[in-house]
Length: 246
Image (cartoon, rainbow, N blue to C red; front, side):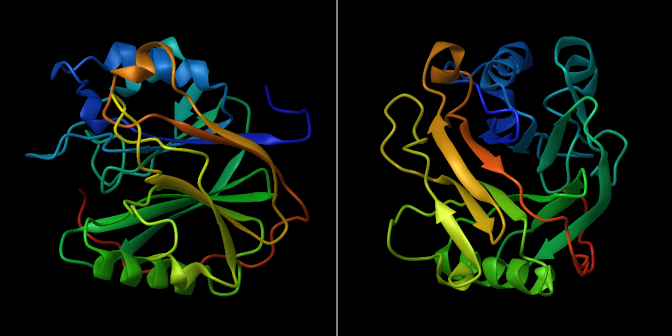
């Protein structure tokens, strides 16, 4: 469990709650979420792709079966997230200054950012499948920070298979950490899910949830990072024009 003066941040690509048995089972995703012991969680693919993008992980289940609440990041009443990105926060933690950050690329992508307790800016993201798109998306995220990268944590599915390439736009501003191989859940070989920390945030520990239903509830395993916040936040994120709901 995380130390008292740290926050456990996590990221989990839930693949629309479709497990390795090809069945959609939101209940077992909830069980995995509860097992992480996190304070703030970034979810990817939290909504279905077609029509009005209804939530794959119902807000009712989150409210009734967890100690989290879903930050209202979506632009549709039926969606849990925006461009599939959702943010769950442990009840009792104050959240302010929601921002949606439109990201360029071949396919629609976006990020969502919230401020937690005046000491941490949390950004949830799911980057594109093509490296050239991911590079542009990371550049857009860095620009959106507008000099406010300090005390900012970016978590999500970075979709980058390389350990040495593809994350150059974050260099000098963020330190990128790979808690471990998180994909494919059946045989983890790639660290696609990552944590990028700005100045003022200290990484205390990090890892991958490998046991229990995490092994088959999605094709990704959840990652977590125990982070100690530093000085209070300074400077807002500059919001980019919001794209269409995902």
